[in-house]
Length: 160
Image 1 (cartoon, one colour):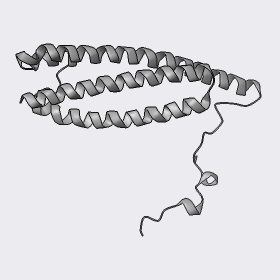
Image 2: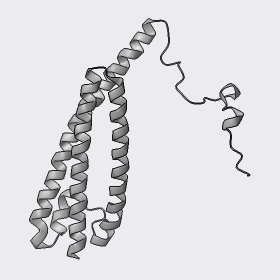
Image 3: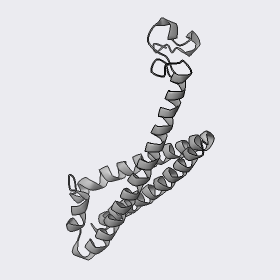
Image 4: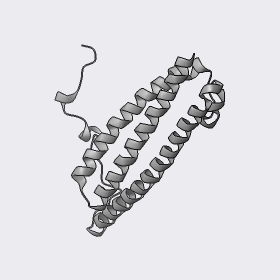
């Protein structure tokens, strides 16, 4: 059973490292947005998507471990209390580190999001001043109606 608890601590540590990495990515995204460096920003967004896949893998690990440890619906702050007494201090330390990393991530992500939203609003304002209507512009992809249907070469026959 101690092995399961160790695995859960390893999971929490991996989450902490992942949040640390996402925080660094958000700080780089903020710098790229401040410098209007769209190429770097795009690259960082791709890296962020890769991190999201990593977190999906961690989520699967969590979903396996929680029922085995009887920790389903237990708040993170209460998790160390459910550990064996010899491991509770270590669990508290790991949980506290994870919480601190999460707070740092939220702060960095909030700053980046605010700046990106301001930049998008600026772009919309410029489009409007130039006589366009940002709200009416269709984004990439196919809209409703036959005029925007994909070409025949891109359609799939599911009966085949």
